[in-house]
Image 1 (cartoon, rainbow, N blue to C red):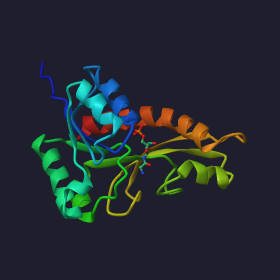
Image 2: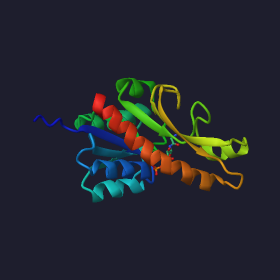
Image 3: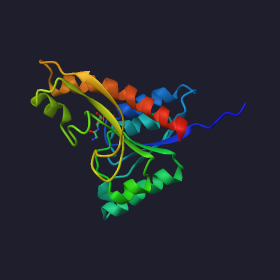
Image 4: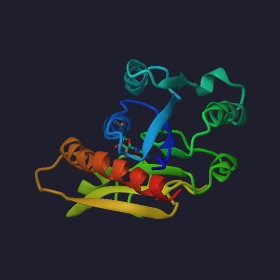
Length: 194
Ligand code: GAR
């Protein structure tokens, strides 16, 4: 029997890292077709870095302020990714806009999870904006990343209802539960075909 190796994931985060944790939990099952090989954050205080280190996953803080230019900062991130020979690069709450050079370097292998039903509500404060607009439905999207912010090809979406008493926090919590399931599933699906 030939056992195919699991695909390697580089996860880029900026903060809490709950999506990263969900992927980590999914990959705890050895039948999951991918595993995290490196976690990179542009914020040394990101909670997700501690989680990764506690699980013996290679983790790097690569902060913009330590580099003279955006290009140098992105070059350092690329180097850390490429050293691990990651197959798929997953943005999971990575809050920095990446240059066209960066996104082109990983075209078709760079994905993001965004807390809205794209193409609606690109950018920040998606939950508040959906409530303010009186949306009855909201959700999350996993998409390929290209040079247009939150504009790459959509891979999959999950919807949640918006209730009249919702605040940005209650809606965000409902969406986050869907994010964790959706991201792990999409990564598994891509890992099987890539
Ligand atoms: C998630 O809701 C993710 O969709 C969002 O940041 C949060 C990160 O949470 N990403 C974006 O807004 C990207 N534009 P996490 O750190 O707990 O995974």
